[in-house]
Length: 190
Ligand SMILES: [Zn+2]
Image (cartoon, rainbow, N blue to C red; front, side, top):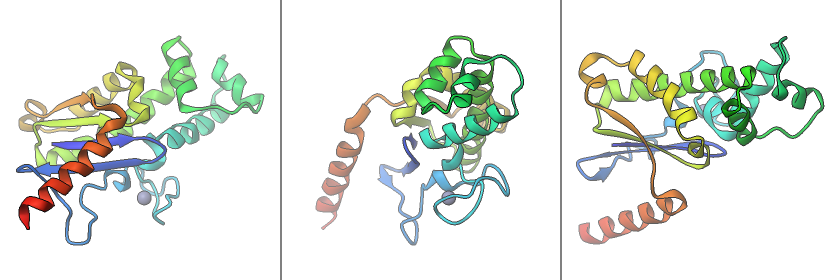
């Protein structure tokens, strides 16, 4: 399985054969630094166009700000930016759920990047499940729907027909449970 957590950043993990993959230098499963937009937003890692800069809570606000600047139609979200309000990713989701055209376009763009990144992970690994967690996953089907659509568009049939995308269910306990399971694994191996 692959886990991706959408919070202030984007984290991830790949579990194969019951074990978390670490890679040769601890970098395995760092989904947040998959390039989704060549020459895109500058990331904290030093390169450009990382998923983290588009699909995290802060990434969504960055995308929203840029799209609002170009948007000429009527939108409550655009008004908020124009009035220099502190816009959060939660507000973007809320407004999208309530029919704001700009907010819906932003969610669509963000979902495209997420779906594309997850599709390429799945094209490589064909996991049974991809689990989306973290605070942003509270957006539920608003995010899951379009993300699944873009995921399907960008996967090849064997993967599209078998890998499933789901929302996480352990909430804020996921990190603690994962850390404990790693400790148990370490203990049994030594
Ligand atoms: Zn990065």
